[in-house]
Length: 296
Ligand SMILES: [Zn+2]
Image 1 (cartoon, rainbow, N blue to C red):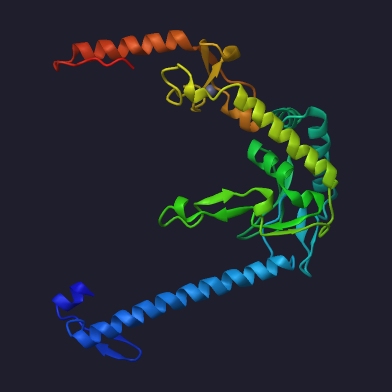
Image 2 (image 1 turned 90 degrees about the horizontal axis):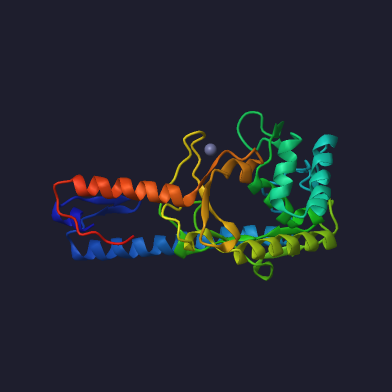
């Protein structure tokens, strides 16, 4: 508006024409702007309230996880494909037996067991496709309360502080169970009992706590954490500390972790750290600038 006033540009809407250089017109324009902002807010709020009250009745539709489909009348039901159901049941049975997510990923990969997924959008929507499972999908299956028959809404909520501009899906954070907005038990057919669901959550949590206790890799003495890339497959190498000690190994395990593929390759950390450090120092001392060396 400042710019328009400067160049004597007129602004028009449905009700009239305004000259931002004039005090009265400018005041009116500002007021209209504020009002439409408020209107937008109310509109958004109403839409949100609408969604929320629909969710409270268990009627709000969302993308269902593997093994479920929406019926034409708007109810959640098992996927009509018998094999899809069998695989979902098998995943829960196998997790009971193996006890870890990683074990489950590798077992399914080894036996080439695939998940029957419904296409979500575009041409062929609703069609069944078979995909190899990855770690994230399996974790979602194990954590989703729907498999125990519970309809939930608001497991992830928006945190405006974490939102990135122009990226509408960012800033969503996972909430704890008591922060979920809607939780309706016994709303749909269940693959597992509530007890088994709780047991699985406790197990996942215990596994996570144990992994944390073994030490986060980032704190270790390895020089090139997150910087080394595998020449064979292009994945980033992770650092593994043997028994929490100072000795470390660079491992290419990304496809092993996420898809249960065989481990690619690994390399003793100390020799790589020494080699690269020597190369860097040699390159620096050869340059014609005087360099004050800092210890890494
Ligand atoms: Zn590799």
